[in-house]
Structures are given as C-alpha cells and as structure tokens.
Length: 587
Image 1: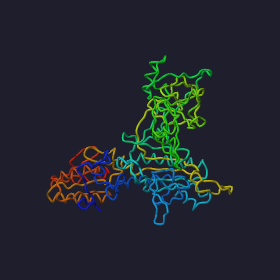
Image 2: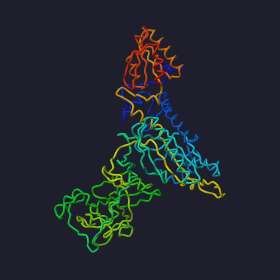
Image 3: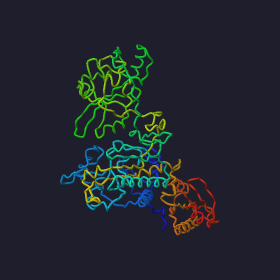
Image 4: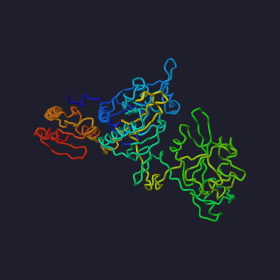
C-alpha cells in the first residue's frame, strides 16, 4: 500500500531546534525522525525514524544469523542480585539507573545484560555437548550519562545489539570471537561506514581481550592512536614504550637549590635555566600530581603520581587506570590534612627521608609514569617550601610503589609494538567486542560437564553494536545544507513521489505512478497534500532525505515527469512510460 503524506504522522520544522549541536541532531529532529523527551532521551514513535532504525536492525540480524547467533529478548528492568554477584551494581556507580518496587526490592535499568544471558544459559544447559552457543538481542539500554550530548550520539537511553558466546574452552572462545568480529566488519561495510579496529580497555565489562570499532569523525567522543605500521588503540589502552635502564653513579646524591616562587613547571624551567648549568626543558622535570580516589566502599585515598613535566594528566586514562574508584584532583582540605605534602614543591626524594610511598612518612602511595625508568635523572620538588632538587635519579634516590599510565598521549609517541610513531584522531564507538573469559560464569556459577564428566566453568565473549548511534552517524555523513540524504540501504522509503502541480492531472499521474512503483516492490512515499505549495513540498522532500524523488508537475499533461537524484543532485526529464523502468533498475 502506498504511504500518503496527507495522513502520514509527520511534521517537519523550518528552524533548527535549540541546543542541537551536530548535523544529525538538528536534521533528525527537523525532518521528523525523533523528538526529544528529556536530556539524552528521544521518542522513536515517529514512523520515519522507526523505518530507518528497522533497516539497520535488519542488517544486524542478517549478519548475526550468518555468524550462527540466535535471537532472544530480555527485559530492560532487571533485579539487583545478579549484578551484585558480579560486582557491577557497585562498579557502574552513578551510571546505573536504580529504582525500587513497592515492596522495597532493588532493580536497575540494564546498561548491558551479561548477567541475564549467563543465568539463562545456566538454567538451560549443563553439558559441553550443548556448546558452542551464541545468542543475541536488540534491546534498549540505559546509562545515566552526566553530560548527554549530540542527540543520539551520546544519550541516556539507546538501542544496542548485544551478543554473547558460550564455549567450553579458550580455543572455542577464540573461534566464536573471530566469527563475531568478522560479522561486525560485514555489517559496517554493508552500512557504508568507515571503521578502525583498535585495542581497547575492557572497563567494567572485564575480560582479557577487548577491541573497539571506531568510526573516524571530528565529533567523536573517543581519541585513538594509530601508526603507519598498523598499530591502533584507544588512548585509554595505549601503553608507553618503556625506556631502557640508564647506568648511574651510586655514590652521587641529589643537589638541593633555592627555587622561590616556582610552583609551576613553566616557572621552574625558567628558573633552573637561570641558576643551573644546563639547558633544561619541561621534559627534564618530574611533576608530582596529587589525586584523590574514592573507592566503592566510600573510603578516600590520596595517591601521588610522578609524570614528566611536559605531560599532562589525561582524565580518561586516569579513570581507567584507577577504576572502579572515582578520581579527582586533591583539594585544599587534602593538603591541609597532609602537611608533609608541600604544595608546588612535592618530590619523591627528601634529605630527611622518603615522603612519598607506602613505606614513607606519609604512607601515601607513589606511582610513576613508565618513562620514569631506572637511571633517569630529574629536577623535582625537594619537599621543602621554595626549594627543588636536581640530579634526582630513579632507582637510586627513590623507588615507586608501581607504574601507572595516566599521562596524555601525543602525536609522535612511539607505538608500543615498534611500528613507528603514532598519530591521534577522533572517533565514535560503533561496536565493541570482548573476550570476557570466565568472570561472569564464575561469579554466577555457570558450569557444564566436559567429555570426562568433570564440571568446568564456561568461557564467554560479549559483542555490542550501538544501533541508534549508527543511525546518527549515517545521518551525520549523509546530508547537505537542505537536509538528509539517506543511502538506499537504510532510507525510510525507496522513492518519494511529489505531486507538484495544481491541476488534477498532476495528482492523477502521481497516483498512478505511485501504484505502479509499489506494485514492483518499491516502497513509495507519495506527497499527495492538496493545498501545499510546490516549494514547501520540495523543501520537505529535501529535508526528509529519500534518495530518489519523482516530481510530477506541469509536464504531467504531456507525459513528462522529473526524476531527481538527491545523492548526485541530478534532475532529468523522463517520460511517464520510462520512469518505472528507470527506478526499478536503480533501486
């Protein structure tokens, strides 16, 4: 049946909505695909939006079936107990939407469903003969983002495909993981999305192997690095190439020097070059950053991290490094409560003994960047007000409690695999694959009998694709200053027929053409609105973005229509007798 615009549930907007930051956000609202309900929450009750979303989901379902996965569906509302057993009730922190029922029972709106899938398989399967198994769902997820932004690109409610594989061995997991990874490549290729596969941090999901599929875009929320030699990683997963140890004089000692009014690296470098014999840069200084960690049980811990002075702390890398604890810069109260920390002049060495480290006077953990390797010499604080020390050597004058990667990554840094310097780019996550291993199976007791009749813990993989985020990215890539231009594979309709004339003959011809096209299997949106001007109809057609448009106007009486290709912009006069054949061949 031909869809008629005269009774189709659609209202377009002439002006951009307030607060819309990116093209996809503006155009999806203006063209009537979505409507905002609250920050990061959108209505998908609009037919145009659901049509595009359904086409993306169809591609995902086809490739999941080709990879051997079977579809199930879980509720979004889940009880607390399973998430508590895996630790994620606490680990997710403020990202979880938590609620209680009338009896006081705790529930959550699921951010992902590892626990539910694990318990389902535990309930139904008990033998290695039942495995391997991969099951998936396409389901709405919920995360209480602190700063929802860019429309569908970062929302608090979103649609995701999540699949889970179950195997009796690690070798089986490798096979299942590769099958899903290959399926993801086919999905993104079919949807016309450029992607980069990068090493990633597993975060609260856990597991041993983690890779993200990122779509390179300037509006992306993720920074990733890649080298010409093929290395690629999210900045959170980037590991620093550790310098080799440097020989040092074991009998030498650091030298303290006066450094008044030098609480910053910039002032310290300028002063050092005035009073010391040398040409120093920020890279020669050791900056000691005091951070406060709030652990899941509510306890607060100070840590000090030593990083080269020419580097800054990357907040996302710090969040990953100290997860699940929350990380913030130490406050004035923290310094007041720890008077041995001389703000602006903190260092790992002191003439009176160690001030930093678990075995020190403060008992504060001291961690360092991998570049602070054995034998490296630094200018750093002497733990005395208005004084620094030079020739402070790692391994001789101080030892750290551990290594931590929280310094920012820069273009030109060497890739850890030796494949050359890296470049930085922005990307948007469109898919993520994990080898979860046995984390969830062990926590929830998922075991099967192996071929020897012995109980073994099942090993799992987890595989997610952001369906609504992909829709937004496709919209972001396919538009012009007039509106959306959908690729044929996901367009809400194949063809839009516009009755643009005022004479009845134009409507009669448009009606006939629409029926003919529909009869050939082409999905048609027919703009049959009787009292709407051609200009408004053309504007709406450009905004909505159906890739093929047939304009039936004044030439209809002479058997002529206009075929408009929104992708190329070409507009050709075509006889009424030819248009069906032309479109059937093109669609």
